[in-house]
Image (cartoon, rainbow, N blue to C red; front, side, top):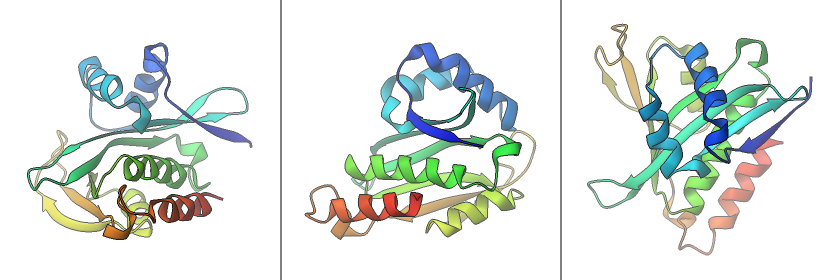
Length: 175
């Protein structure tokens, strides 16, 4: 079972992204949500593609200046079809997104994960995310979420001479 990763390129791929996320995630999103993320931060959307050119994994993120003045990355959506899980696909998609965020100056990265989604919580914990807070009844289905946060060490910020060290280390984790 071979596959490759690619960055989102254009609105021509939006239907593929929407179909994949709508099939796999519990929250419904409108086309406006997808356009909000993909038109402003297309470089933070990555796809996993099978040998037969089927998209089976996707991550969508954004970044902006947080109220504390720091650049903050946000992972809005991550999904991998069930038959492709436990192959490192989700981890690789997250690492690619994180590396891009770091290159563009993010000092922290946050996301929400459903409190009952032990696979997602484990994945993010293994990548260094910590639980910041529990958000009661966060999802439309009534489930709680955890806000997870990854603090980027100052020595790896975009203006640091060591930023390439982190992106290289993330790349090494991908192999």
